[in-house]
Length: 334
Image 1: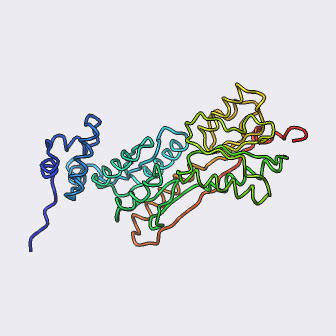
Image 2: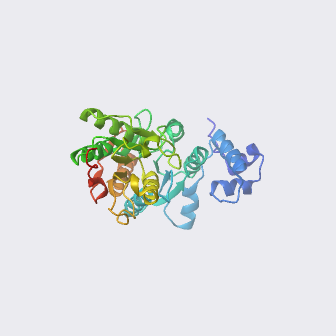
């Protein structure tokens, strides 16, 4: 019987047509290598089944090789920042090292980061896909590696996941505004191609339908879009607005600063640091990022220890925090 020989960096370098030093830089995540070269090296490594042997290297250094990876859309955002802090705390409690990567909304970078973590032989992955197509890519890529999806579920339900109750949050917002007298309620959301944006829209629409209210005041566009809904300046437009994320909320607040006549009730999705600055202060639907992080990392350690357990899909409820802007009643006669 012939023993299988593991692919080496030298093998990868030959396949990719680059130097072994370049391969080392890519595998170690150095930022000095061009994107096309990184893709070339990662493709060659994947074709050869190369896996970086961190265990041997770290044993020589006298340190533990236990590590987890987390790949998210944007580590700088308030939601992911809070989530990451929570995950880090749990991982440290288990004496693991946490490797982090931000895809900055770019699918190709998301894919490269995942492959790099797999090559580094992490013990498990926490993954927040950046778009719908990344979900299937991740299912293919991680294979049998312990993995938990965060913020968005996998496409086939075969991988553990922890998500916010996005639809429940927007339903609560509509009910709250209805209870304060509003009957024309608008929604400004992100691109519905994103799973979270779609869930928030669906929750909003289902609440309107349940209350017998009009669903005509809906505007969906990329969060960085500066296009204003046509009904924003219509005197028969909505008397209250729910926003789909923090970026859209900020744009609404800035617009209201410049157009005081457009002010009405406002509820933003996601809590923000500046929520107390407007007058009235901002009412929000807050995600429990810390709880999501704790739950997801705990689920990942369970998966590492019980690889054959059935996949679990957990949903964490949101919280409505009333500060004033969502409690403004409609104008007289509206």
